[in-house]
Structure formats: C-alpha cells, structure tokens
Amino acid sequence: MSAMHLIPLARLQAAMRLVVRGFGSREAEVDAVAGNLIEANLTGHDSHGIGMLPRYAEAFIEGGLAPNTHVRVAHDGGSLLRLDGGAGFGQVIGAEAMALGIERARAHGSAIVALGNSHHLGRIGAWAEQAAAAGLVSMHFVNVISRAIVAPHGGADARFGTNPFCVGIPLSGREPVILDFATSMIAQGKTRVAHNKGEPVPEGCLLDDHGRPSTDPRWTVVPPLGALLTFGGHKGYGLALVCELLGGALAAGMTQQEDTSGRRRVLNGMLSVLIDPAALTDRTAFEAEAQSFIGWAKASPPREGFPPVMTAGEPERASRAKRSAEGVPVDATTWSEILDAARKLGVDPAAVQREAGLG
Image 1 (cartoon, rainbow, N blue to C red):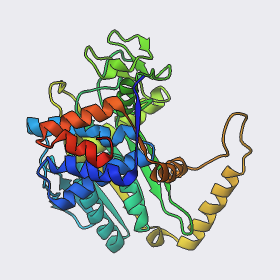
Image 2 (spheres, rainbow, N blue to C red):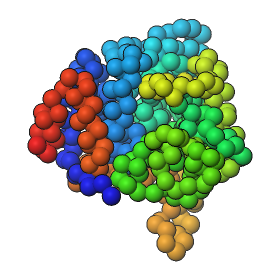
Image 3 (cartoon, one colour):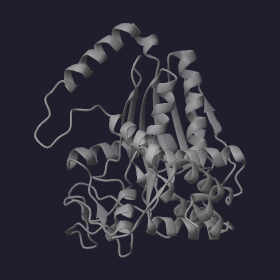
Image 4 (tube, rainbow, N blue to C red):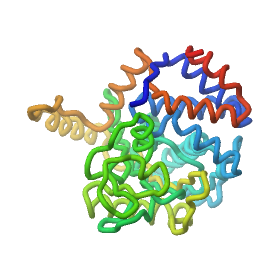
C-alpha cells in the first residue's frame, strides 16, 4: 500500500499553482485550474483532483490541451446558446459557460447551454454550485471523448466514458442540494487512486480484459485494459446513453465511437439546463415545500451501521471542512506522478516539494 502525505491546504495551493504555471497559463487561469482541482480533493473527490495534472501535462505536450483559451459563442439564440471550448482548460471553459448561462437564465427565466470541445471539465458539481450560488436550478448531461472505459449493460468491453450527470437545487437558508455522479459504478479516477494506493475496488465495479469480473483497478489503468460497469445495471447504462446523446451528439456534435486510446486529452461535451425558480412559480412556496420534504426524508431513523440520513452535497461539505482544517491526503504514488509532470512542464520538482512542505 502506498504511503500517504498530509499536505496543509495553503501549502498545497502554492505547490499546485507552481505546477500549473508550467503550462504557460496566465495567473487567472493558474488560480482557476489549481483552485478547481484542489476543491475536488477537499470535497473528497480525489478522482477529479490534483491527480489529474499528470494527464493534463501529457495532453498539453501532445497538443490536445490549449492553455489561455476562452469559450466561444458558436450560436446565440437568446436563451439557447451553443458554445465551443477550443480544447481549453475545462476549469476556465466551464466557469465561462456557466456565467453566460446564468446571465441568459436571469434575463429569460431559463436557458439551455450546449457546450462542446472543452478539455476535462473536472468535477461537474462545481458548475451546479456556480448556478446555485446565482439562485438557479441546473441540470447537466456530460459525455467524455477519450479512451473508452465503461461497458454497456451486458457488454464485455468498453464503449463509452463515465458520462457524469449532475443536478443543483438552491434553497434559501441552507446549502444547495448538489447531486453529482458518474454513471459508472465508480469514477475512472477512483480506480487510478485505488491503483496508486495499492488497494482493490469493491466487487461488481469492473471487468478484466476478457470481460470477467475483477476487483483489481489495474484493468482500467494499465494495458491490457478492461472496463468499468454502469451503476444499477441497465438503469445506469440508460442514463449514460442519454448523457452521450445529449452531452455528446446534441451539445458537442461528437460522441465516443473511435479508438482514442493513444491520445491523452480528455474532451467533454455538456448540455446544461438552467432555470430561475422565481420565473416558473412562487419561489417562497417552492422552497417551503422542498425544505419540508428534505426534513421529512432526513427524519428517517438510520439503519444499523449507517450515519444519519443526509442529502446530496452534505458529504462533500463535511469532507471540505475536515480537509481544509487538517490537510489534504495525497498518496505517495500520485505525488510522485505530479512531480514527474512538473518536470515535463519545465517546473523544478524540488521547488514543488518545498512549496508543499515535503522538501
């Protein structure tokens, strides 16, 4: 099992900004990328955190990631926008796309944003949180153009990506409900984290390269490759298919159909629907009814072995508070990969170590 580093938040922020500068990013982009990745670690989603930087570095060197790129409006239909990300950092493109969608939803009561050709958008919950902070409900259907890693229900090999689905619902006087999940049993990045830690994944999550069940995460990390399974059998597969058709075919004009295993870039398409509750109904009545139901659901007595009932977003907020105070755990293998990525980007790994307090 890989050893663990516990890095104080301020030190991790300084170290990761140093690494991101290696892409040639301007300071605003450095802050956006490093901040978004670290926020994923803080919320407990290490799969979408700083461990992505080695993949980003490979994509950049290959020419599949374009730093300092901004979103472009390809079609403006008022409350209907089609946007192109130009293979720019998803941490920038996603924020800009949501800002445009928020502006239009406030003006029209709702907006549909079709985003294509963005490099990895990271934790999709970040974009639902951005919309929720503006008082808007949002829904997000996302596809992934990269190496196929998830098998269709009943299939023995990979045909599509982890295709996330996300919903954000703001409610006055409390934190928003943020539902954010991959349509695979576990996110691909979680298998990378497990592989780096030397840990197995739970049963029922993946197949080996012959379509046989396995708990060894290497089948999604090291060739020859196997495949992840969708959650809930045919139900997760159905939602993954919808994400591919809406986030891919409709929003991005591109679906996962070819073998891209030799390329390191990760492109996302995302169809987002934003709604201003006040334009649709009496917001006070809506929120009162929603709060009432949440209270009713959370009043269910916990089963043996379970914590008190929570709503979507609460586990992430608890993790954020804990890790912000105590530091962010990073396994030694992932940290070594980040240092190697820094070297490839022309950044002194020893300087990154010192910034993190590990040198």
